[in-house]
Length: 164
Image (tube, rainbow, N blue to C red):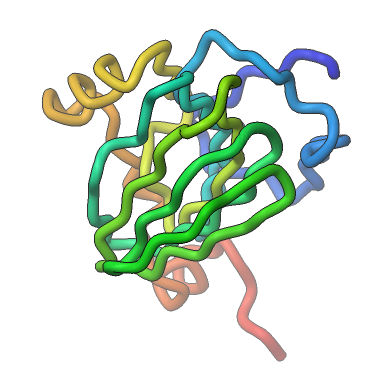
């Protein structure tokens, strides 16, 4: 798989973004805990690698999240329920739901996730969970204002056209 291009911080253009072989050719190992691949007006695509014995950290978001696992095995803890997870599985985390994902296998647990709306800075790359947490605490890793606007505001400002 070719390396991912570096995203920019600008609002998205009205053009296709293509990521081939996302479920079959992601690297089985990655040196990065989190890498934002794309940020749109209403969603964000992020690649994550949870190291052996690691986790994402228990958290609650104010946005919806869908996680698709491409490599490894682990445990999803979402809203008080537990589910074993493996490559090929998807887990939905509704906004406001406490969740945690743990790597329980001998290899990294790799996934891509879609946040709606965006959760991270469009150019964020965090080598470790600790680096990501530090940037969040320091207010560095925040989504751009343009990714948090309402549908009505985007129509009024000309970012999208109203349905006819």
